[in-house]
Image (cartoon, rainbow, N blue to C red; front, side):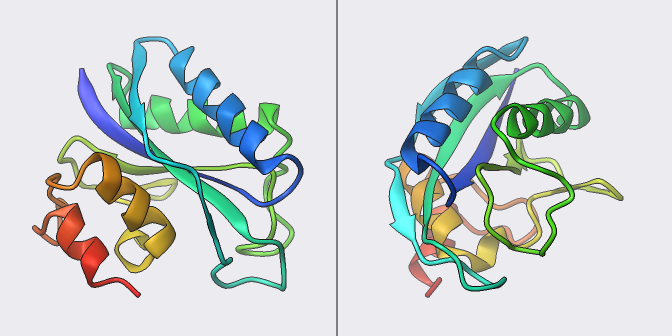
Amino acid sequence: MVDAYIGIGSNLGNRRQLIQDAVKRLGRLPQTTVIKTSQVKEYLPVGGPPQNNYFNTVAAISTSLTPQELMKQLQSIEKQLGRIRPDAVRWGPRTIDLDLLLYGGQVIDETDLQVPHPRMHERKFVLEPLSEIAPDVIHPTLKRPINSLASQCS
């Protein structure tokens, strides 16, 4: 089993309910257990067109799925919850967004999968909730604990 962290966000529809539904579906994945989730907090959107604020959280999971299998499952959950891919506008509004932030200490650089998430260290809406549940986890390429990255992110 590997510990992985999933960023979850929503800014369309019933945002809180969509996040709760996504977490429930994560817990139903094969060979996967949800360990804990951070508080759901509201954040301003980053990039993209004018849009509603996001609700964001991070879920810690334990899984035997490979990173590629997990990513396919995350995309399936997004589709089940009404996300349409590809999004018409980059960083545009969405019912649900599930990002594989970290997968153990692995570094993956494939066409369809980059772990750690390439922009997570720049995003308060990722680092704050991740720091709440995994402050001492080390970012595998920056070699710094998440709480240190979060304290320096504006």
